[in-house]
Image 1 (spheres, rainbow, N blue to C red):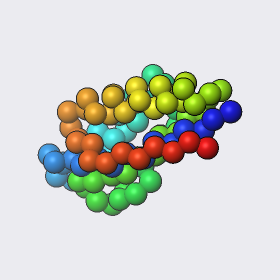
Image 2: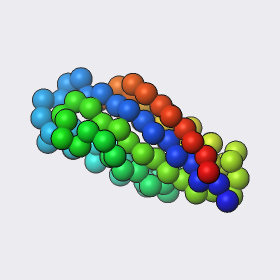
Image 3: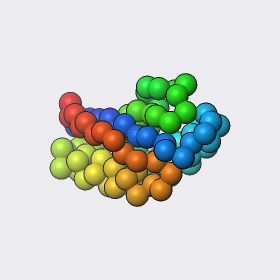
Image 4: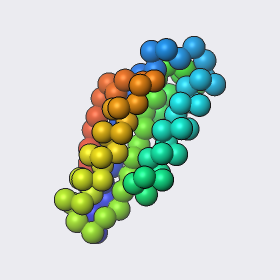
Length: 93
């Protein structure tokens, strides 16, 4: 069993309020959960309206599959037009 953790820092350049940020964030997090069957949570900067850190976690049978899942999730996040990915960190347990 392998646990993969992807930590992604994002910036919302067009966001003018927490409401706008949370709307965008909820939409992307719901898509990630549905499409990849992973856990996603905002873990830092919940009260800042132009910045977030997301934790994406997957549990798989091997590292190759975990890496593939996290890579695809990151691709979806990078394609999001309402934010910019500014930092990435990956860990495996």
